[in-house]
Image (cartoon, rainbow, N blue to C red):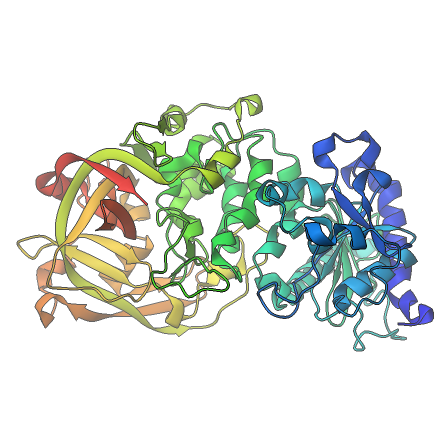
Amino acid sequence: MALHDLSVYTNPIRHWLQTCDEKHGSTCVPPEISARSPDDVPDWLIDTAQRCIVRGTDARRYVALSYVWPGRSNTQGQLLLNRDKLGPFQLPGFLHNHEALPEVIKDAMQLVEHIGERYLWVDRFCILQDDPRIQVKVQRMDRIYSGAYLTIIAAAAPGLFSDKRRKDPNRGPHNELSLIDMPNRIKEEEVMMKDHYDGLSWSYWSTRGWTYQEQILCRRAVFFLRTEIFWDCQLKIWDEGTLSPSQDEITISPPWATGKRLALLREPDFSIYCDLVCPYNERNFSYPQDALLAFSGILNTLCQTFPGGFVYGIPRLFLDHVLLWQPFTKAARRIDRKDGSHDSSPSSSLPSWSWCGWKCPVDPYSMRSGFAYLDRDHCRERAASWQTRNLIQWNTTNGNAGDALSIVEPVQLERQLPSLSPGSAVSSLRLELDNISSLTGATSRAFFHPGALFVAFDKIKGYMHARVKMSVFENGKFSYGPNYTEMPSVLILQDERCNPAGHLRLMNDEPIDFNNSLELIAISTGSANHSDFYSCFEELVYRENKVISANRKTEMFFKVAKTQGDFALPERWKRMMFAEDAEKRCHFYNVLWIERKDRIAFRRACGRVPRDIWEANASGPTHVVLG
């Protein structure tokens, strides 16, 4: 692109950079490379002036690129930094018009030069792709992106510069309002912020797994969409219209600034954990087994304030609550993919009991009891009356006999500590990604029969995309609900007398054998007051055959698709399944439906069984190894 055309992009970006540098300081501007520890410095950077790679220590600062790898999903035939190419990559001019250089990287190098910067970090050229320690390098993505002077987010493939975006004589501040109209002005700015992120949510870039933490972790970024660009830093969102730095005295900070919240954490924040995990888990991967690794930079950051760290993406401190996670839409098991060979026995290296082992957005309301740990307004509102109590002493194993590590943090949380010291957090990420194979413990089990299968068949009103940088509890997607074709089904359990005995939310449409019983294990106990309990998803499906969305603007209708013996539901099934105590609380066991393979138990579904019914039917304790 000609230099005079590039000014359409470079002029506003230069202005935004200068304004942010001057007004936001260290909140948005990272320390220079010379002031960082060696582990926080990139190994390699692209020198855009010499068109080759140089040592990260040669630079004062750098710009990072977030993009989607173009072309085929495998790496054959692509230009990558490998050990045998390390020499040529360091030769000046090697990256000048290289025939295998993707357009988006060419554009990024050109842009970096013309905004007055020199060094660019791009994953495929700045990480040795065949380095034996590449997993460790990838786990440090939090330091790469949080340490970047600026991140370029290329959300409009194949490159940054679109013919659809030209200098428009009408472009600029529109519908300007005077300072007297500040409330209206602020309202307009909120709409514009949401419009930008709505536009981003429709991009292919926003569906890919690796791009998620790149957006969350960077301090500031310029977003390239097909028809516009906009700026987002720790304090402001700017564009070339209403959200202008010239109006900075009344420009408001985005209310969904997850990255800023993450950077300011001083204690374990279950809210931000849910905000990060729930929308992330529906992202797509060329290699599904990368789902946890692509989240590891975020986990590294969270480890600083979560005592005990994480096990397969689940905080040890909140283990009992997060094990209750449910799919917000129908889920698909993440099966490992291998290049160059046909796998006759597909398997997953990610566990079935963790959200990362499945592809689906996670329902934040399924983990809401985790918010009860703090006596604060937003925590009380989200937890409502839901409580979960520890039942099992869980252990993690690495496959070696007798080599087990106890998880004691859930008991600590149950004591309702008012605050937890950030200094007590220990990063266990390497253990989590490399060694742990199973979650083990002793618990009770029971067998119940499938009773009735409820499936969604209609919905009034529509579906919205998820916005990444706002709370899931205010997010349109999680408020409106999915399309009815994606809504999980509910299985009602029955005991030997054909009475209803609890319910499970199914992961997907995998067939259920109504002629055989299901093995269930108890993973915790729980309770809620009658109004909260009878308004939960599974209870509404069972009793009302419909679910009203969180914002009360959509309704989802369910019907019975199959019953035990293909007979109509008995009238007695319409009574309340979960009895109330004198305080009008419903008590239950949280359970997993498991299927065993070679003594390993795999999650099929999660649900609840009334306390009295479980205790009348359960036996044990029995040792369980969850895989």
